[in-house]
Length: 437
Image 1: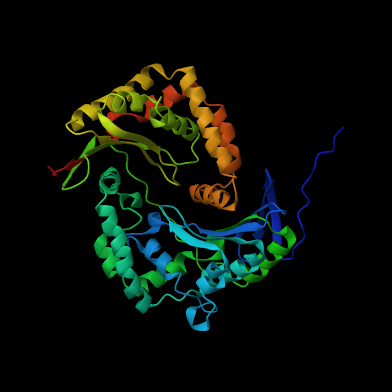
Image 2 (image 1 turned 90 degrees about the vertical axis):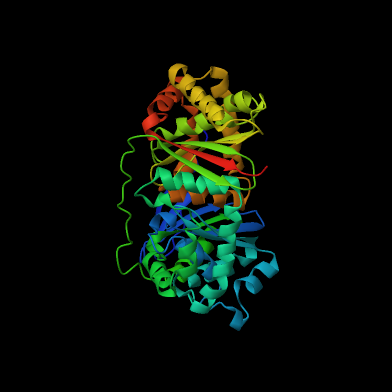
């Protein structure tokens, strides 16, 4: 009989092995609670390193919306031991030597990452450990970076999709912080005091609110030991990480917003409340979004684009930490009435809620999603990006378990979720009306 390989985790003082799933090994630092995920491919010349903090725009409040994103900018201004004055800032240390260095912020998380030649991995670990607790959050940097962030905000305001999407979420959510976008409101971007940003940093940027992920070419024992040495120098947070306890009240009727501006094409969006990413209905909702708008054979493409009523259509199933939205966006062709496009989208929803979907549609959606899932292991960057979102959703094991859940979805389940969530009382509609001649 063939022998089954059993993973034997290396012994590294100060670390505890937690579990292994499909080549991903989870550890925890005993002293401060840092979660470590290792996915080694020892022969690869490239490694990827990422720190995901469980903080995003959902952790902000009025007066400092956009703080996570602005703080992301300030985190690149150097730390106590790595900065421009010493000549060993991130750019000289890593980027000049071929590393891809960046960070992203969204609703439920912020991540800082490097994809680099494997011999530079220890340097990336040391740098990220230093800025976890020793970042220089300074007023002069806030002053210089604020116009950069404001420019990002203004660019978004000039895009019909982003402008409409922002208004749609702001109307769909009354209490929950998903009400505001990651970029924040302009006046908060301009006026948030440096003391508020420092307090935000001290609230959330701790080992026990973070996950370190390493993928690609590296020696597991050596890398784990280096992470333990560098990140183990920090204590766990001296206070409980602030919890978000706000629950969005039940929506009890349709909501509607019309945004009228010059420039751009007319658009229509229709959003419905759906549960959090870890809910058992999520696999069916993801497949439903593909059936509606993925490719030229999808339902909404045939009813709207093939008929020249629209130039594009996209159904998005947002997989967030908290209950979010299933939203369909339609870019209208000239002279197509918003109401007509909205009626056609609702008609397609109603058809699926009444009759489900054809076996061929479901098979095609599952085939397409399998291809997308396979691409998540196509190199360190793809792997880190995918793991980042699963960590943000609240359970990294979705990376390995979600594909199995997708494969078991039936047409009856698609019909069930369409009937459950595509209701008028949970609906928010948005129209972008261009005044351009």
